[in-house]
Image (cartoon, rainbow, N blue to C red; front, side, top):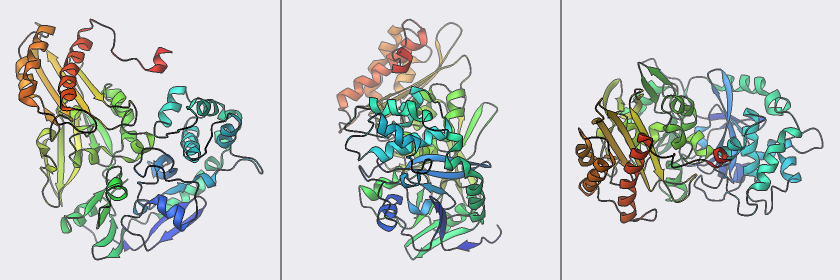
Length: 493
């Protein structure tokens, strides 16, 4: 590999000004820097875990020749991950001289704010959506605001304000739209292809130049913390006060952010976010669309990566069970060497994965189900949106011509120390008629496969019963004997 240029600062644009920082702590958050260093206090700390949205800002990044702005949680976004981006806070919003921005004026006129603490976050989330889609549907508004919580208004006033934004101005005349070309040019000028190294000893951060450079850096320092979207690692810092140094930031890294389909297999780079993956996955594997819509809020989906969800090995990660049921394979890389394994083999025990020192998740390869197969995935949470999984079941079924089960894969999250297949249940179904009697008989095998725990999200008894009922739900929905179990509020209206 050619020698990599190294620089010792991060460079980005904050609102209208270029920023160059040569002293950045590995665990410094964007929220703290905005409030404490730049006195931009419109961005609030509410939960410090990416849940309430009071800290929402927009981060613009260059992607495939375009400048893409996304809402993110500043409370768990690390300062070291911002190189080559445009950070936009609520203070940067402006309308015509002497006037509020259209989003702000709509919130005022429709009484979308009461105590006001959460208001800047709502404004920024609505602003991000308005710039992408000036006339969105109610469903789009609700999706964009999943990650913003308000204790005062009951949301209806905010929804009325959201519907009215375009009556106060046009998105194509917004300053972010008018300045887009100049901002792109400034960001392109910052991209020198260098590796960034800041700090010394253990207390340092590295932003690799590209994926090959990342492989080389990690091979030399296998104990470093890898940070992609920081939706998990951010909480290690804000909630658990963990020391994560040294840190390697890989968000938006060339070579890890591609998603493509070849011969009915979708290959997803480890740095692909939920938002970036949504269009292809929801189209080619429709059952994944509703699941992805319930992973965090919009800010979390814009930051969190599929590779990170797999790599951290959580037993309640949302993507491993459906990918396992689909027969996905995982590519791991160390230096220039790669190996590909079945995804289900990656998870060994709680907190332990089949990943060698210096090795990282490079991509996951997900087969698209054939037309004759049936696939379903169901997530159980206390709160429907933006909540962590209590239990999740994924089901893949192929029937023979005589109606018997030719192939079945059932995988669960939240039922064991790792994402895990229901091997005994599968065995009880294989070769049998796909009937309610067969399914109910197979349910007796669940205790062989799982001994769930009781925790704050659900009791062991609840999880055990829910797991069985999810199989029954899959049976009912695949036999067409009843109406769908769930209809969204917008569909019902």
